[in-house]
Image (cartoon, rainbow, N blue to C red; front, side, top):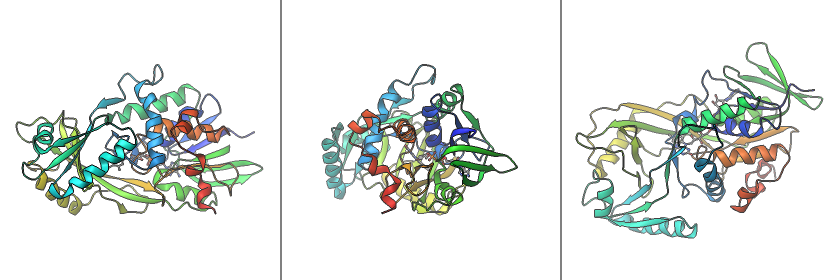
Length: 376
Ligand SMILES: Cc1cc2nc3c(=O)[nH]c(=O)nc-3n(C[C@H](O)[C@H](O)[C@H](O)COP(=O)(O)OP(=O)(O)OC[C@H]3O[C@@H](n4cnc5c(N)ncnc54)[C@H](O)[C@@H]3O)c2cc1C
């Protein structure tokens, strides 16, 4: 008999949420290469929950995640997982049509938004430059996520149900023998598992290669973020997340500072991503064209890899060409907000069950997320 029913490779939010949903129902190992869980993309996000964000399958997973965020199981966390934030899409005179498009899309989805005048937009975010902003669209129900509480909650839930959760546990080879995976860790140890779940983030195609499985064409895209001090006399705490109408950049309050992102999507090899000075400098220029935020220093800057396949939809399901190999990859820029439903979906499919009813009710179909769509 194999040591584990499921060996999950990568303990970011994807692996952790799936592990928590499987542990207790099966023997689970959750192995992470780094010394800290969440060292890569999960620890670098902007922590926003927005039902407007992403394509139809993403929105289905985002909305189906909401009940968990609002009422996690007892003992999962001491903190609220969501805090009201709101998103304000702001536009100049020539971009007002874009606000109409976003508003129409939101109305189709039943998402509450409110059109704002320039003055109303400035009232919500007083650093906006009068004359530059011509109007706004307020997505009322967008939230800040406590990513650390969510991630730690899942890791605790997995351990409490008997899961073997490890750091400094890099999988370096995978071979299938007699219906069981033999996974070699860096060092000498070898473990066996009936099913391998590939939740390796930007490295998911690399891990597939270890198992002799064809890639799904994952492209890691670098995204930069940096923190600025609040301007003198300004308290940003209650601003909405401020998104330029064409998503040229955004800024939002973050622990007494202002988080800014240029919305960059620069293709990268899987790596420990690092921001580039020029990307930050150009973003500061764009920010200051819209907002009166003097920039005396960059408090901290970072970058992370948002990994997408061609249709920008996650890949969740068994690989048709390799027995016992399960994909949980391609979460792109939405892996945190979708994690509660994506983790349940992954666990159900890995156990051979149908999609969870509430996820199906939101319109998600298994074929939309299946790796089989790359194998035609
Ligand atoms: C700047 C930025 C802003 C973002 N904002 C948001 C947001 O507002 N809302 C949102 O929902 N999402 C956001 N995201 C996206 C979100 O962070 C990701 O979708 C999510 O974190 C992906 O999680 P993951 O578990 O797939 O990947 P990761 O967190 O990268 O985890 C994968 C793990 O696999 C491990 N691994 C790889 N290979 C091996 C191996 N061989 N053996 C063992 N372990 C291995 C890696 O070390 C890594 O820790 C943002 C991302 C960035 C960069």
